Image (cartoon, rainbow over all chains, first blue to last red; front, top):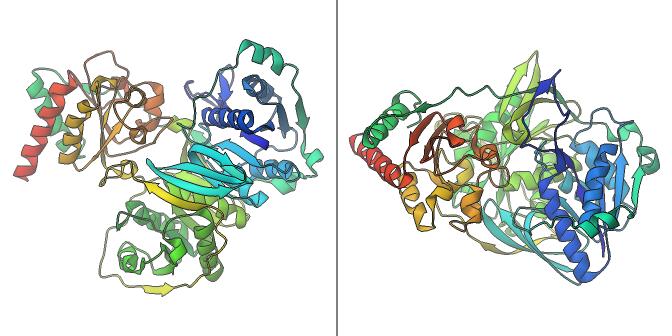
Length: 257
Length: 325
């Protein structure tokens, strides 16, 4: 099995968001592997351990992402690839990322590609399906179970809380939903081994891509914080009176009932 | 500049989902006076067309095929591409639902287009359309413009208000026949895990429980309150992890992101992971024994007390209100 995982390095959204000069201030903030991509990595490792083959984790970004790639290697991926677009792309969007990934993957003959179903920073959930479409392979998003038997794949897909049991065949791209597995922590021997595993870096040039080929179709013109919520009203007095007051407030002040 | 815009309607449990009407409203804004064409896809769906016109669609295109009974990206992709080829729209609006999220990137790629996902509001400035969407799990927002090609957006349910229904409106309903073939993913079975009735992501009222609910049975008073208010029950990750309820109810960074008019958090401490899924609700009520609980920081109204005392009292109060009105 030739398995690829699409990984994104993300800002940990548990961090406080500060905006400086129209951008989210990333200085000193914690960065992590996108949590949904951790499920994808874990599943890829489990599939390889069962069926054999190799897991390559791929990311599009800059050299800061080497840290997260090493973590993925320490979890058990075999190889890592950083597609460094820092010098070539000033501002990309999901089209950009998908195009870069698809160009990289098109001659790799992947059997299975896994990705997170959404990244917790940008939150668009587009890149996985876009890559599949560009490669001309089918996809199933938000999966919670994956069984591979030869070329036949049975997947359970989460559909807003309901489940679809889906049959497909390889090659296939799937995006991981919470519940797919319990991602492992890198072990100490894993971390030691990861240092010796290959981490390749490629640029647009190596993929025969020009800047125009990956030019974004959308552009962010402003980033802002939601209006700060004023401290709410903690009701006082007898519980029964508080409940009555709450119902009145919801009707007359908040007007939601 | 006027544009022709298509919007995709969705059906669940025999009714059009609200987001179908919200998508029409968004399509109207994008169309700037141009034509809005609603699209219905399924096995036998023609009967829903008039409702879409009542909610503002100028025309409806109906695509019916036995292979379109259940959603698959290939089947719906072929149906929508046939509509797009026939109508040549300059804008496309889907709901940011399981279906919309799954299908829109595929079509955007086929059309070599951008896609602005999860839009919560649309603004117009100097003739340019600005699409507002949450980033960092709702802790910030961005305004986006489309710089190249077709304007393709998905709209988050419950945010862009639908137009008011007007059954006197009329419009043309047209069938488009398509050839659906070579489906590469087949839905073998659908396992219903969510309750019939109110859909969590579209609910106007959500009553959510956390670890404070203490057991599966502890959700019963919450369900009763939700029933009186015509709402849905949700849960924090803590409650799901503890096995008190199914993960399908989970609201948070992992789980569903919801923006109801009223969110009643019962026995929920307010971990950041949970706040990411609900903090943009219009009005938040917190009920918690611990006056220091983080949830009170985002709540509009708080009651410090035992949810098992407070929730039934609330249910009774709302019942009285119903009798009176």
